[in-house]
Length: 400
Image (cartoon, rainbow, N blue to C red; front, side, top):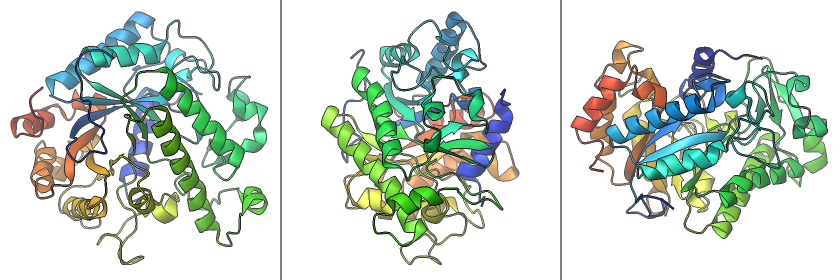
């Protein structure tokens, strides 16, 4: 199925940001160290949002596009790229676990004719950029027909591993064999390539769709493990994945940090006195992501909350949320970077060319904030170009 990339960007932004129901010198410090800083950009492959710009480009064109993205990152004095290498239970490297990504060639399982991940890492390092490999753990497909997956796709060999929801397909986080498989698929890239970080986005259980229930009753019945409450069980399933992946990354590569970019609201103060003084969707109950526990248990080296709202937003104010996240990481070894909605620049009067720069002044109030990550690469060269020039001019990006 051909997915319109603008529509996909809108969907991703609405869920992740809305209120919906080794080579050249590069940063060497672990992002769990208090001294570490980061100035990053996310490079999305799903729906060809950033790279490659469309399916089926020649190898030369794919590589030229990626080099241009990196050159723009360097020009903006960024120091880290977070590249999505496993967007839909597929791979941008020759994986023994999953098929080649369709976002590369147009056909899932079709060999692109080179090793993209090796190229992606090498080109980043050649420019002094740290490379964080970005994985989506449970999304299998943005469409709902398993028959459209590659014939050798694990989801077709193990149909009991997946469920359909909201028009897409997902691995069931409640199955121990699924968690083991996802962790192993990710670790294949981590152990074989010279990555500088291992990164997950905000998608765990799917974001809620009105009128639909997640069809995981059989998994709950078989693997309740003493949990009586479905929500608590789902959160524990996600916790197990986070802890397992953290343990395996650190065992295999002790100097490589592991981080997550969660939805910007954990819980609201109305639901939990530990929560933020905001409204909005709560990742704790919407997608069963208990970021508080991940930080407090020391499972994350860094956290990048997607604080994709403007200063003064009536429901989820940027300043209020930065203060909350700074308080969460205070006294822990977890570094805090702020996820910035570059894609929103120009979308409304509140998101003028100065909004991203104004965020810097808010961040400066909190020593826990060690940097920013911008979503996403295409926006930095288009709608947010002038805004990012102001970020650079006003000190948001240090010397390289």
